[in-house]
Amino acid sequence: MADEPRLFEIAPSGSESGDEPLPAGAPLAARMRPRTLDEFVGQQRIIGPGTALRTAAEQRKIPSLVLWGPPGSGKTTLARLLAKAVGARFVGLSAVSAGVADLRRIVADARRVRARGGTIVFIDEIHRFNKAQQDAILPFVERGDITFIGATTENPSFEVNSALLSRSRVFVLASLGPDEIGAIVDRALADRERGLPAAVELAPEARAKLIALADGDARSALNALELASEIAASRGTAVPVVEARDVEEAMQRRALRYDRAGDEHYDLISAFIKSVRGSDPDAAVYWLARILEAGEDPMFVARRLVILAGEDVGLGDPQALPIATAAHYAAHAIGMPEAMFPLVEATLYLAQAKKSNSALRAYAAAQQAIEETGTLPVPLHLRNAATGLMKQLGYGQGYQYAHDFEDAKIDQQHLPDELKERTFFEP
Image (tube, rainbow, N blue to C red; front, side, top):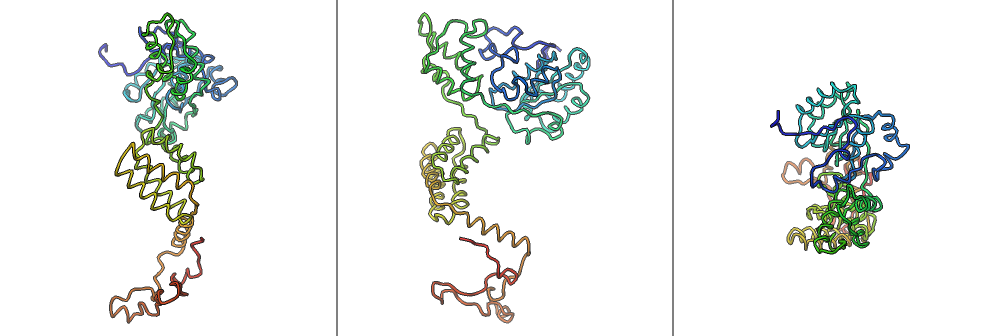
């Protein structure tokens, strides 16, 4: 129906967005999308000459794939280029807006054109498909009706159904490095057909700033370059020169990759914890800054510091726990951005403190003993004789009051009989 909303895009066999006319005013990032695998910048570990994926493309036999990587690393572009390389029809679906009914319509079309190169169905943000939607893809993949390529910024081990994952190969894309971002920026400056529409110079410090603020995201770099060039052109010089201040204005602020529920969250907090545990104050404060600058709840960090003080510093420095607890209270009381001060102070203190996990080891040993022996009875002499009947039963009989002895040290059995020879705490 003409009025039906378009939830997916279809490119004919052998076509690719870089070859197709783009709408007027298309963003620079869209215009500069690579047209061939040879133009694709980065990810040489998975798509470079001689790799399994490159070989599969050259042999026109692309398996079902899951592309896992951060924003701007080229997941969508790579999927398009693979479809073009094998002469397949490319159908792009967004997991945000499409559903099972859309998938079935696509498969019905795919069956009709199977002999003409087949169909690659690309599902962006596959992690947003629920289990039922992901399960619906399986029979079509198994019968060969379509080749499935999913893209996700989330760990597919947790976000993609195991059945679908087992029928796909996972390729991990990395953030682009500074040299790769630089090559993409330089190409946009030099390409008069698809790049910036007029001659523009990029000052060296502006180029360095643009690469740094892009943080490995090619799309972000190109979008910022386009806006910065417009800012420079507004000054009316014959050949606009993009300065560092133009890049800062265009980018506003580095958008640090972070997801409070995703891998980036767990990776950064793991690095923070292990840096404190490893007595590396420089790394500890760096990871703390990464976490806070990305917008994490400061109370999450404060709770981790209290845990670190008990688990990793412990009796090595008994002052660590009250300091971490004070930092937790202070951060809660004042909020960000000033909460940074108590969190940094506690982080640096814990990182430099003497470490001991004797409390953790002692508790773990006690847990093991409970697992082995069950709920052993409390020795009678340690029981509280609260009633006359209890006294008659021997409760409290023979108990020796510790403060009647020097330094409150007493040779008295406090463990159940079955464990009286066991040692749990080792200083």
